[in-house]
Image (cartoon, rainbow, N blue to C red):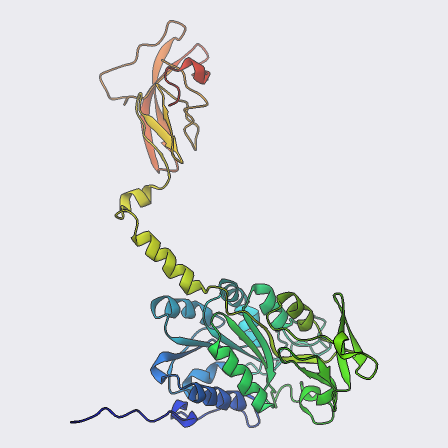
Length: 431
């Protein structure tokens, strides 16, 4: 009897495509690519269950180099494709690969709303603080004073703080890491891949051609201990070669202290589930504070967009049989005719007549017996006007909301107008 054999475990190489990887020598993208492949192998996610989406930029070549499904889309629009995938195939593991130009310039609106809605995807933003593919222009994350072909006298703009932006948009997982710290990069990517909801990872990625050394103070051996703060859940915020410096929180004001002077109970203990403190942590940006790296915030309890969407679909299917004409008609409706019913949002009126404006019919506000006869002008039946009115005229009533016109008879006085009357004069003005 033949027995089914267990398929061999996938290795990082199994997730690599047969395409030649073409980035500049020394580019940080190589490290990110390798660690993503390693993470997928560690998690043993089937290749047919993984999709990589990208926009435009150096980082957006990523899908070509993965032996999974993928799409190299248009500038900043990868989130739009992610919605379609997750709402038709919610079981897929969808990754969005973007850059500081693609995701934080033309694609900012798409990215922010994806994070706000908590779509269950993993967003990896390669931040090199420059437009690499288009030869080094200023990007939304370039620091003030940076000289580029588009800012030859130095940038006068203030940059985005991507993790703060993601927190503000409502992302339920926000982290920052570096291309030159492989162990940390792999750990953060693994956490993001397993998160349920919108996961946002900013990766400081060196561009050796157009912005080499932009993050050197966070990666070089001498400067890294003093400038990089690696946060861990449940542990104090300490930095320095031997952890001799720490961050203390005075109410809502952080301050750098010496661990010799401050008691351990005074130090800021990182809680990645505390969103308010995550905002403070994300704003540790300039001296005297180090730059935080690691998982700043994680909340897997919030329902995802797909879950809420499919729950709503299920509730709708359990209701009465679908009625397409009723759906197209909408909740605001009226019926033109003498003594007929008029309604808006469920309120029903019975009126003998009414007064129309160019946009709406208001039977309750202006209703008077005998002044307006809602019968077609071509009808042989003609309304006899009360003695105080002089004549009957045929008019055409335009209904812009319905894109139609209604001919009707009306009685007019010597001024040629039909006066407005109180609704109390109308028999059965409302029921």
